[in-house]
Amino acid sequence: MLALIGILTIATLLFCIMSKRLSPIVALITIPILGAVVALYAVPLFDGGQEIVPHYTTIPKMVVAGIAKLAPMAAMFVFAIIFFGVVSDAGMFDPIIAKILKVVGTSPKKIIIGTGVLALIAHLDGNGAVTFLITVPAMLPLYDKLGIDKRILAGITALSAGVNFLPWTGPMIRAAAALDVSTHDLFTPLIPAQICGLAFMVFMGWYWGRKEERRLGLAGATAGAGGDENAVTHFAPKELTEEERKLRRPHLFWPNIILVVLVITGMVATKIPPVVIFMVACCIALTLNYRKPAEQSARINAHAKGALMMASILFAAGVFTGIMGESGMLKAMAVSAGHFVPDALSSHIPFIVSLIAMPLSLVFDPDSYYFGIMPVVANIGGFPPIEVAQASLLGQMTTGFPVSPLTPATFLLCSLCGVDLADHQRFSIPVLWLASIVMAIGAVVTGVFPL
Image (cartoon, rainbow, N blue to C red; front, side):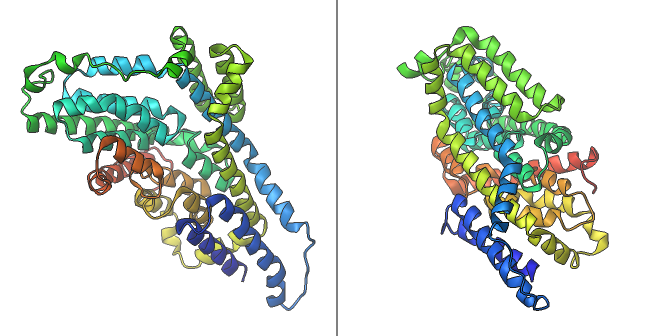
């Protein structure tokens, strides 16, 4: 009975989120609470007829327990958004963009690979929309000038952002929150697999560039459209607004770069809690770039909306995970599901998940999958639950998010590139799925989970 109530709770949650009957925050809070009420008050009546009436504080205690587990992750995400927002406002990306535009010249191969590198750097903050807003406007004029297929612009940007999942990105935080594990334990073993994904991105950039050179009839890597090499070799970055110019701190480029490198190194190579790293780094970035308290407050306010939205979803997810775990529904569902999985197959589930994780992005939004589907699969047994989370991160809303109709960033990317959604999906989905499979093979080879 408890397993059935858990299944109905998750099914209702998925239906309400995916059909947009309720917002994720409302669904993650109200539906588990209703499920807990039914489980705590109805199950005893059917199991032996014992009328055991729980204390009225039972469900609130479950809620608080779940929120308490997620509080450090929510705090980390808030300060990570502010930190990367501040260094971006200060102009840390400007010289990088200018350098990339200068290096790529008029070679399609260099332009496409350079687009991937720029998207890789821009995705450091883990925000897909910001990545697209930085990358596409900077590179689109080059594609237009040379006549390079703009589906490639969308594809290489999507591929670069998709394989660049980091400890502070949404899927990583959701996976860690759902299973109550640290992002460090999730991410560190996946670094070799991610390197495989990045290498695949560079290969695809070279492959697409070579095809475009042949299609456009360019004799060499430096041949320009219509023979005018200088027309795009020195193409300038987009013009800044007056407000953006006031925020720029070009003389602090290297201090900001060093700070970002130290933050990433601290996240990967140390056991310092990520929330502490980002809190300290955020304070340093604010003080370094904007000395006046009013300026610091303005920068925090500028990025507060995105930080608050993600923190709210994580706290709402704490309600869901707390109730599902503390009530025993998750365990009951896993035990029931385990009866239907042959023993010989159970150890292969993480690898199977890694192969289908990317297309699952087209069906499940990140909240539905990581808080609804993944915990059940992870607790079936026969393997460490963390392996399913790591397998999921190789595709579900990582390589999958830039083509999923469930994410607004997909429509933003198509709009910026001037590409139809259907054309973008037909062109990019096979490549993004292949990238996920390449990373899955890398994960198997490096022992993250067995074949």
